[in-house]
Length: 63
Image (tube, rainbow, N blue to C red; front, side):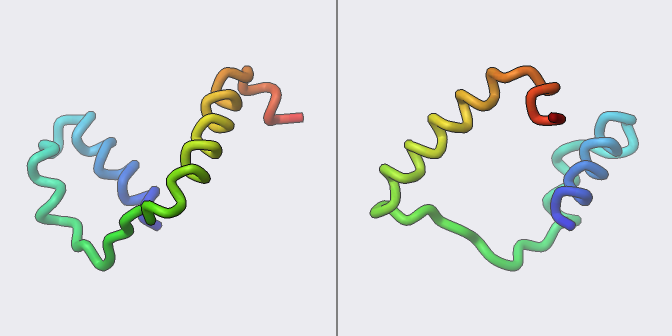
């Protein structure tokens, strides 16, 4: 649901119905996630895979 709300807010800002500064007052923060330092090597490894995947053309993922 968060992604849909974020997309909706981006659309409203893009269409000029609101400003980015107005979004935080409309969104409640229920929980905050902080990365665990002990997993940093895993995060870095997965991020490298993400960067490699990003270079593939979109049609690669549709097969």
